[in-house]
Length: 172
Image (cartoon, rainbow, N blue to C red; front, side, top):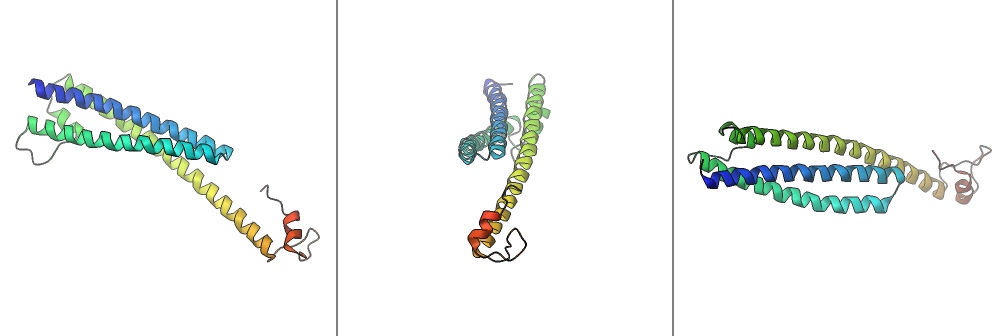
């Protein structure tokens, strides 16, 4: 194995480690966002989303670098290859210890990606639930403010929108 290929493989290994760390950071932002949602902290949620956006940009850059390295390594291993190989295909054509390290790093990254996807789904459901709750609350307030369909505590039609708002419970 020539020095250039050896250097590219080392770069790919480092890049896979870096991509796993980036996914760890995204996982941390998911936790921050969930805590902000629980507290109703819009500012904290916004800060976590902004920081997460910066890490997404880094993930995009790292993925582009991974694809470039994979293309270069593919050509080094098989100049007649028609398309770049993925990490598994590259690893299958390498001797140990490169094969083992690449497969292990790919496995770690894949596991982290699945964990981030799982937590993202949980956050998506929490946001949808909060959005539904807020929409219902706004609809209730809008109905009360317009006086339509509101009743006083004694069951009679409310005299004014202000009377209905004073008697409305917003704790549900």
